Image 1 (cartoon, helix red, strand yellow):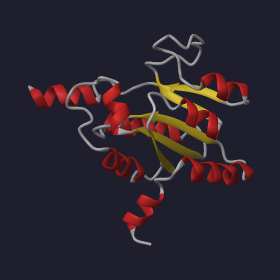
Image 2 (cartoon, one colour; image 1 turned 90 degrees about the horizontal axis):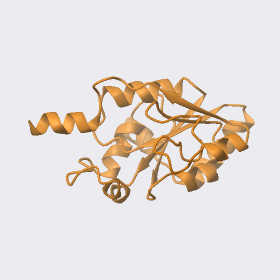
Image 3 (spheres, rainbow, N blue to C red; image 1 turned 180 degrees about the vertical axis):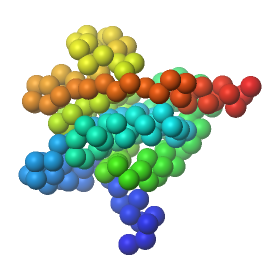
Length: 171
C-alpha cells in the first residue's frame, strides 16, 4: 500500500467507523472523538489533536463538510480548503486513526451513532456545561456521559487560530 493510499484509508464512512470502533472496543482500546472545521491546518490544530490522542488509544476526527462550514458564517471566504483537502491533511497525522466528514451543523448524530469513550473539545467549551443553548456546551456530551464515557477540554495554543491566520493574510 502506498503512503497516500494509507492516508486515504483513514477517511471512512460512519458505518466503517462504527465497525472499527466495535473491534477496538473488544480490544479495550479507548476511543477519543473530536470535531472541527480544520480549515487551514496550523500548530494550534496539531497540538490540540495530539493532546486529544493522548487521552485514549484511538482518535477519530469528524470534519465539517464545506456546506456546514459555510452555515457557521465564519466568513465569505470560508472554507479556504475544500473538505477533501482538509480530510487528507488531518488523516496524514500519524496519531489520527479515522477521519469522518459530517454535513450537519453539529456532529450530534455522529456522536450518538458512534458512542465514543471520550469526547474532546477545546477549552473555549466547558465540559460541565449542561445547557444545550450555551455557546460553551459540548454537543453530544450528555450522550457520552450517559453511556459511561468522559468529556474533556484541552487548552488551546494562544495566538493560533484559522481566523488569526486569515486576518494576517488579509493585512
